[in-house]
Length: 239
Image 1 (cartoon, rainbow, N blue to C red):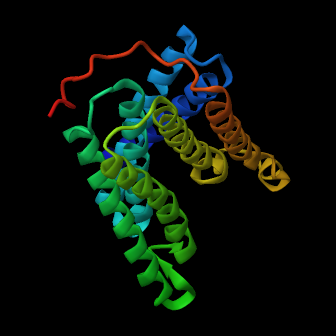
Image 2 (image 1 turned 180 degrees about the horizontal axis):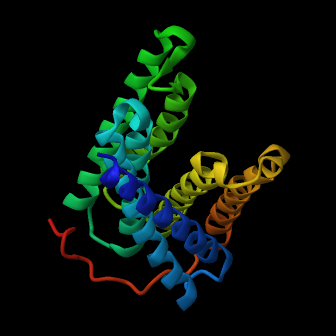
């Protein structure tokens, strides 16, 4: 039966589309404004759910969607760690932050292993995807692993480090959503002439440029205002 997988796929695509729209609004408006906060929350929820559904699809049909499992876990951990960075002020990383970091580390290892296995296959492919696809995702997961290790060893992040962590992880999650919608599986929804024009790659480029802008602004002009401070110990992050 394909009814349930098809329904999950439709829901995954629908939530991903909403995530792209919400992410575009959150990235474009003034940071800390009510519309930014609302759009950011909508993006986090829709992107998180879409990523989880993608991971479920990958587990349910690994021969066709295996890489989607890893992409889904990557998207989920990026969004979760970004949200925790923006909202929580615990003196040291709590169990929720550490759990997300552990999930990302395991996903990173799985992507590297899949890439190495793919290299040993004819045409350097595994389950229909090239080794470079697995290594590309592993590079993004690896950046998060480095950041997580830094947080664990430092224990406490200043506002600039904390907001930079929030920004780049949320933007990278947005990059993954846009890639899926415009240059990945979602590209099939556009006319062939549009696909060949290269215009569908523009959203990903704009997201990376926006990420660079906000990181530079954060370091040189201070962190943009984010939602109101939560107590130092928050449920789920208290030791």
